[in-house]
Length: 121
Image (cartoon, rainbow, N blue to C red):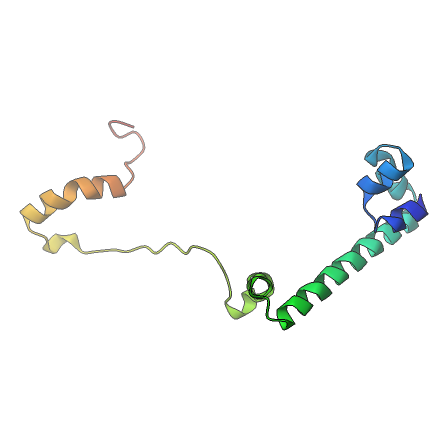
């Protein structure tokens, strides 16, 4: 089991396939033997280290996709985030004329959710 786990970099699915058993069998075996589980985790960490190394290499080579990915994932603390920030805009409608309110009425009715229990809900 140990050799199969290491051969497949700690991947339980591939280990099970090699040993012709269920993935859950490999998982239970790892729970039963914590030192085996630790080796599997270490093997997966090594693959992650290699992936990071390859990403850094691509960034240094100027690969735009890798640079963007790196900034999205690792650059959050520096403001490189990709998320939508809803902005609440409040306007003083009391200055509008009656005609302007009539024109804006249908638009405002679509923009403001009706209260629970209101007619038509």
